Length: 239
Image (cartoon, rainbow, N blue to C red; front, side):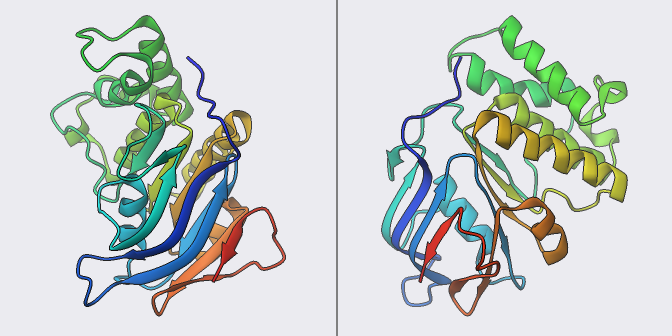
């Protein structure tokens, strides 16, 4: 099944206000466009709305104002099943289930129908490949509850890669990883973006690390997204 979408823009925000209370919005974004195959990192202090922005793009939190289009679908419509992959801070793993079954949830979203009772051969194959990519093959049948925090983050990343999405939203997905493991995870995710022309939007508190991963880095502060690497032209952020 193809992961490609028509058009050049993966995410488009126009006149968007995010938050949970119209009287106290977290941020206003006049315009933000992210192209297919581009990687955008968002940095900034804690508690200012970075995760809320990611949830808004994912369709989990409605915008207070403005228009959002993701993978060709304009909110409140959702992208087609499997097009959007999301790695939240709390990961959302099933703790009593094995690594394989957690990762299979991702590949099923792309390669199986919503009412299919059994996973397809293709879904199982992509789950196995993604587990190997994350260096977790020796943990394939271990329940999540027995894994370290860093290992669980790799499971969540494997679950998303197995899904083969057009857009990945990742919230601090590199935290709790040692340097070597972090580099391996970064390499796998960046290679996926380049090979599949998948857009990635990630939240990263470490600006140095964000600059190594992203085509463009923006900083959220004082209710705005401010360009950090102004010389990079691959993404458009207009304030």
